[in-house]
Length: 270
Image (tube, rainbow, N blue to C red; front, top):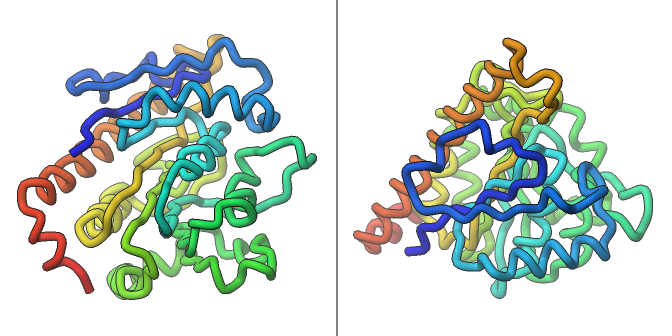
């Protein structure tokens, strides 16, 4: 089983956290890159991809703040078999980029739908009630949305339906912590109301019944040196460190369980 975590350092968000210290991890420094927050030129994206090629043994990637969620597009572009994306996010990330030469934290899923032929289905969980209007009509049949309210009222039924209807053996999981209630994480974006234990119950059940091509996590609180020691910032760093630790522990415990007993995966399939 792959067991290495890669932390992508675009803005120093992880330097004040400690959740990764007890295990093996790669620290990938992108601080020298300019103009990569929120938007990224596709020519620069190729340079990022080249650097990530040295860390393909990783199974879990921490991307930094939601400003860099578009890195998920790069990680998925390396998948070599048909797969389904399970996206936990308070936003659909399907808005058009301002220019064809750019990819953004708000357009990366639209780019994925248009250009990644092995991506067969997308489930977006935890979005706002207005999310439907942001999905282009051309992808209505390929994208399934479950709003934050539906997760609160029908969580078990939704999980059962997803596991039953995923059309591929392989899935990729992407988590933006802005899907979480502010009691569990603070991100700098408008947030949803999913609780951390609910999120990880869904994630671990999916890990138990499907092959996992990879997992990425983003949603760190934005770094601002002038506000580093404000109570709001220290509170956000503490919450996010706790959340990241819990997410990583839950993922690896379930992956280890599956690796030690492969038959348990078959028993979890719907």
